[in-house]
Every structure is written in C-alpha cells, then in structure tokens.
Image (cartoon, rainbow, N blue to C red):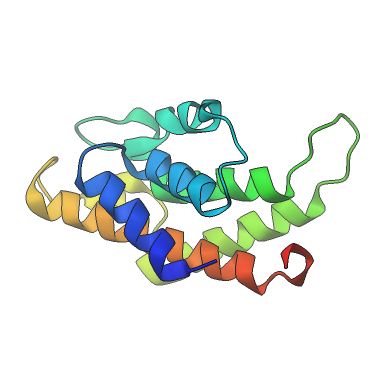
Length: 148
C-alpha cells in the first residue's frame, strides 16, 4: 500500500469538503484496499469527527484517530461471537500510543484549543492530523506480514 497516496487521498477528501476526518480515513483506506467495504462503513464513521460530534468546542477522542481504529477493526476485528480479537486491541493501542506521543494528546478539544473553531488554522491542523493518521496506519498495515 502506498502510504503517501493514502495520506494524500485522505487529506484531499477533507480539504475539499467531501468528508471530515474519520470519514476521510475510512473512505481512503477502502479505496486503497480495492473497496471491499460497503458504503455503510463510511456512514458508520460519520459520528466521530470533532471528537464525536463536539461541534463548536470539540469533543474528546480525535476523529482521525477514531477512523484509524475503525480501519484496524475492519482489518483485524472479529465478525462472529466468540471469535478471538486480541490483535485488533494490540494494533489499536499501537496507533493510539503513536498518536499520543506524536501530538501530545488524543483529545480533539485539547488539540484544537488554540484555534477558533472552523478557522483556516484549525482546518489545516485537522487535515494534517488526518493525513498523519492515514500514513501511519498504512505503514502499520504494510509492516504486517500476515496481510502481505
């Protein structure tokens, strides 16, 4: 998977106003992997932007991070009751811990505190974070020999 291309696609989808952070992540990965998910997956991700709908002041968990965890669930998660699922939890923790170390917080409200909501600076940071998550996630998936 071309991590740079997935990043650029996710950023483009956000910057052009077609999707917000979590939606852009899920859509870009679905396209990069040959569209195996239905459009319902993107719709499922629609409640996660702005820290799970915290319009105005931001909620908590960053929507880009949430979208990334959704992709990990799709790749590694269980589909049937009783299936094993420890790998998805390990991968979600890895993505979370990377984000926290890189950004200093996983909370949207904290990440956008210094910006006026909807300002160009706010939007550029969120677009960049969306791209960062997309690129990191693509690299994580590429490193997994089980997916090769």
